[in-house]
Amino acid sequence: MALQARALVTSKWLAEAVKVQGKMRILDTSWFLPKLRRNARSEFKKRHIPGAAFFDIDQCCDKTSPLDHMLPSEETFADYVGNLGIERDTHVVVYDASKFGAFSAPRVWWMFRVFGHSAVSLLNGGFGNWELEGRPVSDQYVRPTPSEFKASLNRSWIKNYEDILNNLDTRRFQVVDARPAGRFRGLDPEPRDNTEPGHIPGSINMPFHSFLSPSGHFLPKEQLQALFSQAGVDLGRPICVLCGSTVTACIVALAAHECGHPGVSVYDGGWSEWYTRAVPEHVISEGRGKHL
Image (cartoon, rainbow, N blue to C red):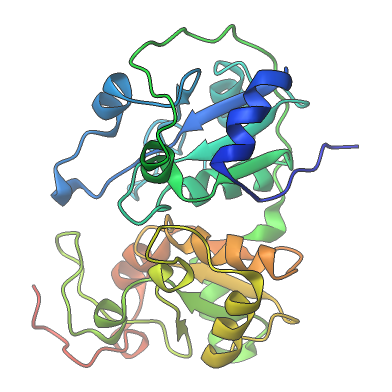
């Protein structure tokens, strides 16, 4: 049976666990939008949690796709994480250095789970809070000894363009969009060129940052449940999440997991694909044509 792990761990827990738990791998999974002009790998080399390795979502992806960091094959994922020294009984802890406290790390948390590895946790509060608490950081890196990892993809947690298109009629699952409200409504520009803002018909907007406290920690379970309820999302029904390229959408997936949802699916192509492929009437926008 696959090992299980709680989704969120504290920095205090992690600081103690690394002293006593043998099969653990900490991963810095930082990724930033290109327009921020931040180089996640360079920042990792300068400052990271001691013993961490770097996980690059732009390398562990389907490189044949024109879309950004699409989910890789089982073989690609297994090879990539095996080279990070991760095996089936390794407890993986992910974090990122975003100012929000969580940005790209929930995507990697979800990737491990969708490939059958439940022994994965996210450092609640991220690298920023680790530093604020005065915990150790390092610029030293020791390449992990490669291991064998076996991946088993849960295809029911992945939706493609056709699935979303068919759902416009069937309404078999709820679609939640994690982008900020301005982009969802079509009033603020998208961060990617040649893509206008807007949303899929019938989708529900739950901006990713609404699940996080000002300190960068996930809100308590009761507050997360209230957010879903206020947005009209039924946690007892299937949910599919997206954002621009389905990175921060996984913050919604983790929040739903904390509320007891058995497994949120992801529209991996996200708004970037939908805007490119959808007919005009399937792009709902209050500011159509203003941002190109």
